[in-house]
Length: 234
Image (cartoon, rainbow, N blue to C red; front, side):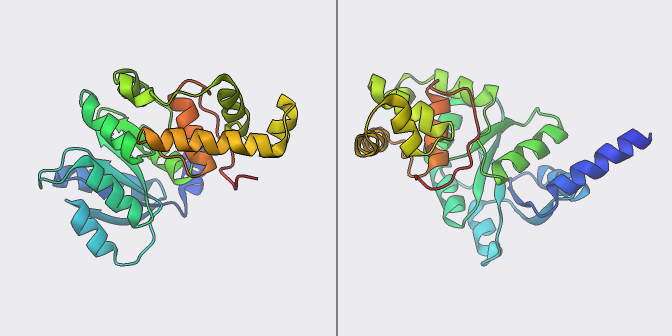
């Protein structure tokens, strides 16, 4: 019993300071997640039945991650909801019924950091929220399934050298070291990186930061789901 208590205490310490919110139009879900997050040591910020209400009530407060239900009953779209939450400074963790693949794809294309099915154990949801709050990629089966089901989602056509640069850089190497490893100049590597970003923009999957490039590399099978520090380009 002592080991269990120690484990629970360790988990609470890990989650302390992680600011989380919930948007779901089912009151029972909101209340259940709120209780679970508080019990696990998260800093619970706000729960709301719609994104509009969440953003309004947030009123300048900071939140690291929002657990978002995909299918809200207020007529809002997935893209609108994800973008609105991101505009308020929060990352988005999609909380969805697993068979809504089209909506999951839309959420990921809009910039959601990951997907967790509503059938998941509560501790899995808590762990996923903490992962997203740290700025890391949540690479799970639901995400992979949504991507694999959409041929257009991965249509950014990267050349061999571009894929090599993306692999090394998104894995965590500074661009200068990635260039040296491939035997090319820094300016050439920078040109490849700019070209990669442009290609992702052209297919509606922008990647302005290093973490975004990691997500694209994972989505396209260039990386298995590594977690670089997400720092500046250089």
